[in-house]
Length: 334
Image (cartoon, one colour):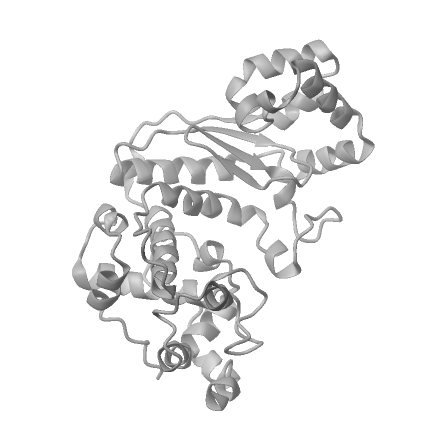
């Protein structure tokens, strides 16, 4: 493994490699975009911060019962008055008001988010006609939640996605906080929605099963948002993506030589799949979650070589079959 550690992120190799997974020109399918869907993003942070009295909050709770239950947890409170009292306290909190002002400035216009989300929903609806368009709300979470998804509702905590240079930041490790920025919002939502269609075998507890699961999720997001940069899907920088491809042979050799594909120890799986600043078993300069990135490449090769549709891919719960039929090999470097 010394060779692998020494060669990882060689600048000479990096300069030879393009940052993007696919270089072909991207173009959205106009036939898909011509669909009519009913999507409206409701700016609840405005409505709740413009409320002033108990009666105002009571009205909003009744106006948005799905939000009141699915996000605020109305049924968990001893009485409606308890929830209203908490909302009033939040409304009167000076720090929350400053945070709200920042959100108003940075997200005054969310047309780009609405357009990307509408296009993504149209693509999902094209591939999965049974998909029901959820209600979409934005809110000020006080850094309590970034995204909440239920079967019928999506809530976006806009404060999580303030610019990385903003004085208010979520309490997250830096390597994760850097992914909480405006361009990541819709890809994060689409990746989360992929779980509705991503079939798994609950008896398969191998590293390979985890790799394929995330590979299918990222492949789904790229298929639904084909013009979105890979960095906003997997959360690597362009440089990290380039470096991963430049060292793909070494990464794959590490997995093969250490017999990791069929590893079932949760601790070992987490080292390659879980959130981390780097994959230290390979190199302290290698980004975390390399097992997910490798799984994405395997799934891409499977879809290409077997020519399966997106619904067929997502419906396949057999990780071993996807791997065997992918014909995956690391991309040779020139």
